[in-house]
Image (cartoon, rainbow, N blue to C red; front, side, top):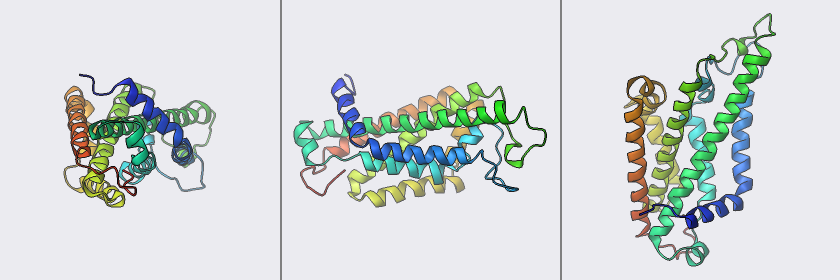
Length: 246
């Protein structure tokens, strides 16, 4: 049985088109802040980086990438009454729609982060760095030439982790019907991970050297489990309340 069908993709694309202004704004702000990281700002630096992966994580994932993604996701996920009546026949189908929209949104964010990060690091390495006699502090750490395969794996991890947090956000919102509370809970979980299990740093930095295949399989299984949780929670949600936008 297919999890997602062509109808789901068509409706998700309609949502993306409907909220394209918000999506472009969020992605544009993320891109501008990443570009700002390679500009000379005097004697001080925004951060020190030596690879494309480090440049992407210049702004901490927990404080920059994740909040931006949750804001984008909260702006596009709106399953109010007209969507229920005109698009789907069952609540389970609405849950699958929300899960697919999370996956598409995580893919868009990952793509923009990869493209902007690649352009910025290429600019420093091939344009600024070769012709620079006196290194500016902000250009002291340039990306390694042999980092391409590592970044490809990291990009998959970035997409998986972002998708997992997005699905948790949707499941919590279905449970509590409080979007702000769900956002704060997801961000708190990510921040607490820095001081407890440190799963995010392990996935981003260590898993490639230890067990890349098993890590990808494990994260994929978590995504599948969360998709089913979102579908199950949607079966008990009252979408006919006008103020219930998620």
